[in-house]
Length: 246
Image 1 (cartoon, rainbow, N blue to C red):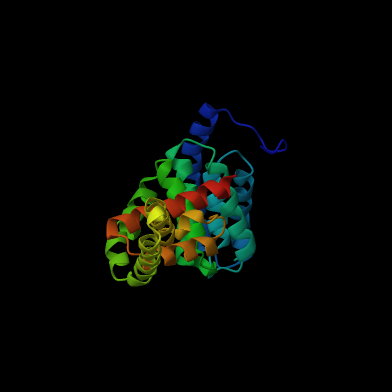
Image 2: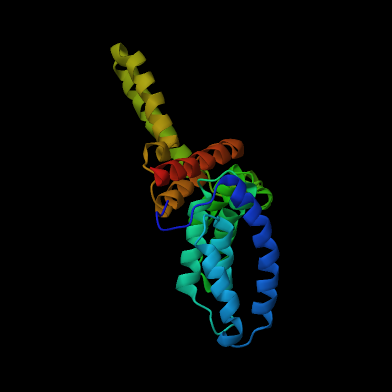
């Protein structure tokens, strides 16, 4: 925690959140009707001051205010920075209202709202964290976007990895038939190699969004069932999230 930032106890923060929500409605009304920076100056200044407190939702609301594209105070870089600060601060909190800061940042990244560049991998990361923290909006978004993963993966090609595994297995078994003393050993090796060829993504380090995309591409081309593909893809995202937090 920043030592220069005003500290609030949990009880104080809860009460302040209620007051902030009421105040935010009034500020939002002022900003929506404002057409010049001068008209919005008091409201923006108040939001910036609130963002200095230990309240993720205050940072989120200030970031959203700065991303009002039709207003003269629109500031893409600064707005995204405050949204990110709100999400990161919310990651260490237990209140559902704080979790919504993670959801808000994630959905903006997923959809590229307010001029923000799309980042589906990072967006899903924050949606998942928000859902884990209890955000109802994030849980609903998960169901809407990713519950039909099995149906989507069914459309992908699955033959390549299967053919490679079969050819490799056949070659090893053929060698084992030729060399009778190595039959058992060759059969075990064939199975291990076939498994590795069927699930190459499990040997990857999933650290970047490019790693996630590459692993999911392997999964889509594998000969796994739709259910196994969904589980494998879920494993990839969990590995990404785990490595990102280390």
